[in-house]
Image (cartoon, rainbow, N blue to C red; front, side):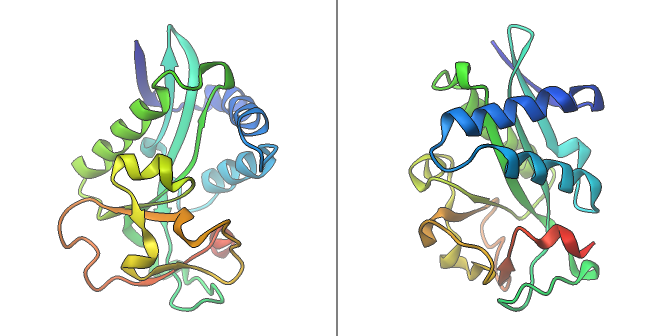
Length: 188
């Protein structure tokens, strides 16, 4: 059985280790250091939603982690983020990690399903994620480019379709356009 619960400060060292190991062993593109740094940066800045950061447990042990945080949008590709213009209704899903020994056991699916439901239940407009389109399309994510949500110049995507968004209700993104970047947390 998989249990999803909010993260607690006592979990932070174990989360760091889980995320580092997940990316180091489970991906060909990261050693996990950047993802752990992103978690720390999100927690230290004004975009952190403690109630939107979750741990997955299986049989009482930590098996996964994911965060939903506020997402600032820039009006230009250079990524000049105005902290006073942070959208409170669009979330960034990052990072998503499953313990390497627990991969391919439905934990990621359960985490994302519950995360999307959590965001919908609270009236958020949309969730943005960067990752594998083959994986995230299963959960309703679509190309962010189709909605006018683009990466800043500093973001190097493997392919444009790796930046995705999921509107959480019909018309949720009408009239919303902008640029996102991962240095956005520096602005606050």
